Amino acid sequence: MDLDTTLKNLALELRRGTLTLAVLSQLTTAQYGYSLLQRLAARGVDIDQNTLYPLLRRLESQQLLDSDWSVEGSRPRRYYVLSEQGRSALSEIMAEWYRIVDTVNGLLRPDAQDGDDTYGVD
Image (cartoon, rainbow, N blue to C red):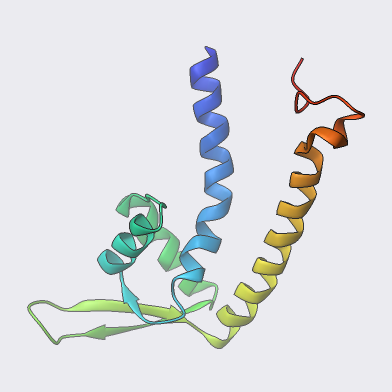
């Protein structure tokens, strides 16, 4: 495998782990799938609908989301919003996220590399 492919795979793996947090963070108010896609994209998170909809169904089956159909407008839409359990989970996941970010930022700082300012790169 060439380096470009390896780097793309590593970035994809890292990104996958953040999508659940990104989606949950945007569902404090009810959103339907396409509006959620747009909202995430406007904030720099591009997610394919073939990734989003299965994720929404999984989060709902885990009781982190509630959903309701709305038949107002031109077509029926399923709206998703955090459940009470989802709000608690979001709070916990956010706290863990900030702990991880702080830890990794500390590891990546030049002074964390025993005086080596190359960010651990040889």
